[in-house]
Length: 147
Image 1 (cartoon, helix red, strand yellow):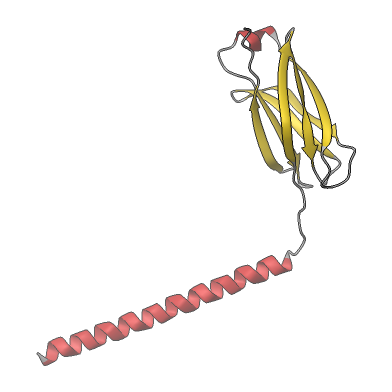
Image 2 (cartoon, one colour; image 1 turned 180 degrees about the vertical axis):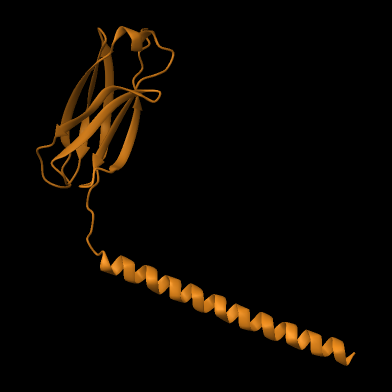
């Protein structure tokens, strides 16, 4: 009985010590993360929002209209079919103040190959950070079905 009591006491002591070490490591890790965030206090305000986006396809030309809101002076788009880029990245200048919705219009030529494809072309609208990373991508299918 004494051996069992001694064993349980040692086991609980070891468990208690290891739990304290884990808590200290977590607190230390959080402090390191906070320090890293504070050192890089440069705020990235790159963003873009879209609303009232309409896509109309006539004579193999997709006409995309809508409104954009971005603190930057431009946003970007490309058109993809699967993984293939059929319209390379294009910049769309935006004339307006931050938090102001600005009308935009884009025209994309749709080739005969894309029209006959079983895959749907996707319009991708987005902003870019200074380092070139894509921000807030929006994916809009271009319906080529004629009714």
